[in-house]
Image (cartoon, helix red, strand yellow):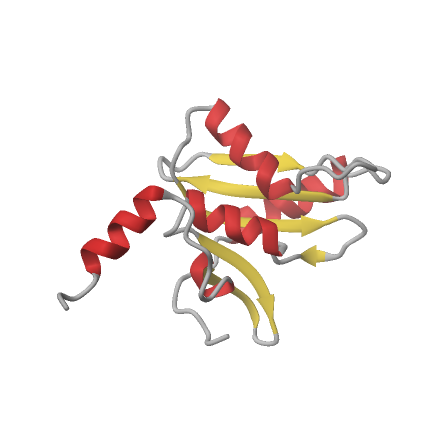
Length: 144
């Protein structure tokens, strides 16, 4: 992954890490996420593990953001309990994040430290589900 020139939102990293350290107890809540909404608000969430499956912290955050009227997110980060630090989104979350927020930046840990990268870079050649993404791709395609 090439290094990003986008600055890392360290306040989000601190927020997600603090939430993971103070609110993740037991096996039901092991990951925390924080995102910055376009209006500057910080939205937070925890995963909700269950033996039948359950949503990751990033997916819970999408719902929490919508419930608070924040439909545009600029950057997101997830942090694990037990001092695991920044954890990249799983494949399912990458797909959902691309579908909902195609211009979203995701803070990830790399060999060079924390980086803020476009979510699409985490899911190259991703499946196109959202109609608005399909419409924008067709509009951007050169004439044949």
